[in-house]
Image (cartoon, rainbow, N blue to C red):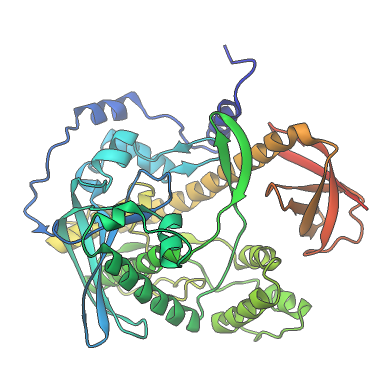
Length: 488
């Protein structure tokens, strides 16, 4: 029997479960998968891999993340180039292909991060423990190594298996505050000799990589996706997460690691599942968008020119830049998984300005990364490939579809969370910005809380980017509806 007065968290959880099931995602693990987990022991790794536990590895992730997929460390600097090592959790060592755990992961293909809860791709006993690179735990990993020049050029790639140990579990916001001089050093940094200088070096290297990628046409985009804030079981706010130098550090190293992995698979003649964002077919609409601001873009897709426009607009209108970014993102289209086979090159990633790109750095959270890990381990060992090209093609289609379904579930629950948060504030007025105008309606986002809704009355003449005053007239938690009217 359902709870007639569920808490905010409980109600959102049920909405999330229902949304997953409607989209063909499985919120629960099978009895067979759970039975496999019970049989897994926390046995110390005995694989005869390189022992790199002595290096000052550290993880940087969200404050509440427990499924730690990667560690980073900076090696020696020589002739202006710095060696970077990225360790990726060897999830395949505990989740064999064809197991019940693997079948569940292959069905959902991703962890689903909703405002209510995380629905993990793998049971928590694995993803937050046995296959997580937890602090002070010895773990098997695939290490991706590369050098970065003072100008940000990546070279000298190497891949191998190793035994690693996380010496400090760090969080983005506190590390960024320390690096940017606005906060104290996290206690974990002081507990590891030399880690402070390590992180400063990694930050410097990442910024040089970022600068070079954007010079080549990687796109500067900023969104306003809000994270829920709970007080116990009660939803009390929706707060926008800001980017920072710690997040950029990890992003740059993961982009490079994914590129190195894709390049290695290509060089060894191994078919692989690539992550691509094709050259935008709706480029003429992006050109028209730039024209609204008095800017001119080339007639053919040009990432460098688009990046120049974005940088100029961010400087001119920081407050409106997230909404401009959202319009550009929609026009760019969605990323997808495709298969690259020997002799047949796949398209690169337009938004990241990279030619070779796969997903390999989050095998606890994404099934394509686990597939790539198995292909990579087979290539390193000179063993038979775990998937045929036909199987990879089918997996690529399925992973793209399920990733899109997961995104729709996450978006639907965010809308329900906004409706829930505002349900008792009908009649109140808010400052808002118009985020979308189409034949389907006019959409706005309030500044605080960061909630989106539809302008259902007095929307005439509203244009994207307009700052307006709105009144809340209706909410529907189950359907995620938040309705506003324009007020003087």
